[in-house]
Length: 391
Ligand code: FAS
Ligand code: PHB
Image: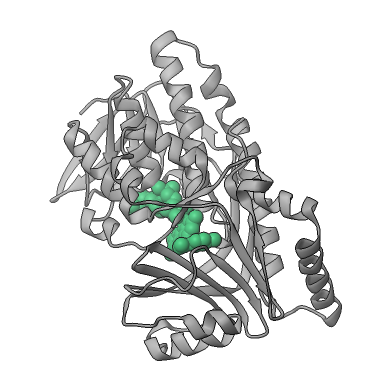
């Protein structure tokens, strides 16, 4: 099989890139290791930056989002029995965030690719990029026991943190930067009305909690938990009790509980791989970077990578201009590191770090007090949360 861009991974990065390229007449093949049902079964992000929404609109997959998504102009930070609303819109000249689940984005993108004749091959085993530092890269895979080869001009590694494409960059070229956090997030999804109209981020004496949502009838909650916790040890009742114990009293009193649809524990890490390009291989999304979900940046960084990469590929194929491709890694990483910093800062601000000294805890309390009382501090949080420009 021959194509122009072989995309490894059918997560949001891979499918969005494939759809954007298709709309500009550029052919791609998407190779996905798991089944489509498995990909659709993942519960992940829920908050979209304005840049992500614009890109989904450019990809022509915004119809359901426009009907069903919620627009939030603020969020609450709660600490020490106090709750402060960060007025995102007022502090950023009218910007807001959009609440729409990653699962729905995956559904919309799969449907768009199917409707436009996209080639998305799932359950592709042992996908492996070859000769990415030459002029004729190719990707091999096996399906139903039959070996296949995709010859292409470029390979897009959209295969997430545990993917294979990053390993195609030689060790002497690849530099990685990592911080692993000493706790995880236990998330619960339930068909109950959200406790509040907007998100509530909580730093409580018992640890971090987050009240989020997917719709007016479906809520998403998280509590910080030790890394050694096992989700099977947490009944729904135990989760709800722990969550109520961390929420401000008024929110706890209003919380509507119910049976979980999904419950899982995600570890938290910050990770960046440089460069995001090697020869004719380009990394995008979680394949190149991971952030703790505190700042709601993971999925949104995948969007800005796809924005830069799709423009570089479109310019190359339409005019022969390869500057976008040459500048891709540097441009993407400039925005990645700002989001990595912000996600680290939000995580540091709102979680209990077991190794913290009394001094550290006083500094954290002072940082929250400063945030509650300083418009400059709130503006800094707001402009990062709604999303820094794609520049
Ligand atoms: P993805 O990991 O989504 O997709 C990569 C795809 O490549 C997968 O479908 C995988 O099966 C496939 N793949 C892997 N190896 C392959 C191989 N060798 N061959 C072929 N295919 C291969 N972000 C937020 O903003 N907020 C959140 O609350 C949040 N929660 C998260 C919870 C969890 C448990 C995880 C893991 C991530 C969470 N994220 C969150 C981040 C998440 O949304 C990612 O940023 C987003 O999925 C990135 O999309 P992709 O880059 O497409 O990577
Ligand atoms: C979510 O709704 O899943 C969500 C929202 C905000 C975050 C992380 C996760 O920071």
